[in-house]
Image (cartoon, rainbow, N blue to C red; front, side, top):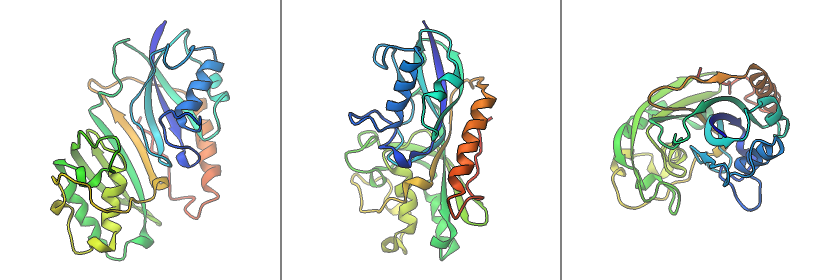
Amino acid sequence: MKSYLFKVYYIGKNYQGFQRQPNGQTIENHIESSFIQAKLIHSFKENNYKGCSRTDHGVNAISNIFFINCIKKPNLAQLNYYLPKDITIWSFIQISSNFNPRKAIQKKYRYYLPKILITDPNQLDKLQDYLGTHDFTAFIKKHGAGQYDPKSTIYSITHLKNDDFHIIEISGNKFGREQIRRMIGFILDHRYHNDYPKKYLNLNDSIDIKSAPAELLYLQDITYNPPLKWKIDKKSITRLNKFHQEEFQKSLFAKSITLNFPF
């Protein structure tokens, strides 16, 4: 039996988050089912499955990562055949059996913030307050992942634009439940119009913030040290690009949310 890491794309709106749940309607539940049907594993538990990033209900990913021991070499075309069209595994590498996918050095997200929600462009300057190492308790949902280890480091915050969106790219070592959505939500919340995030950093209690919508948040990439050499499957990329284009043709922002692959 050999160990592998996989990269997976998904649109999260139809799922109750990434992590497995009893009702079966999560990304992990579908991934486990596809691996069992492809006769690559007996179960996640028996084959030592480990996910890297547990994205929230509705959040999307260009490149989330998971680890699992497989009975034979994976065939991505076969795995994707058993997956819904809004989930595609598009890359994998063989890895050491003791590799821990949760020990990433950086996670990068993009939030597509509609321009119509920003009446004052100076609002976005407040995002720079988040840079550096802070206790983000105030910006992590109570009783959620990260609540008991709320200190994280934000390495960079980049502001890009297209016709419809302010694209906020945030990189850090780790993030708690709804943290990025609440960081963005603070900027949008009229109750905090005259406040800056730095006032609430390093507090020991959560504050009342409405999280920004999940469907506009994308996990872009996860980085390890030393860097990993991924094998990219072109047919899988074609499959997910086709779905992505069809999905967003239904949207007012069809041309504005583009896929930016980390390779």
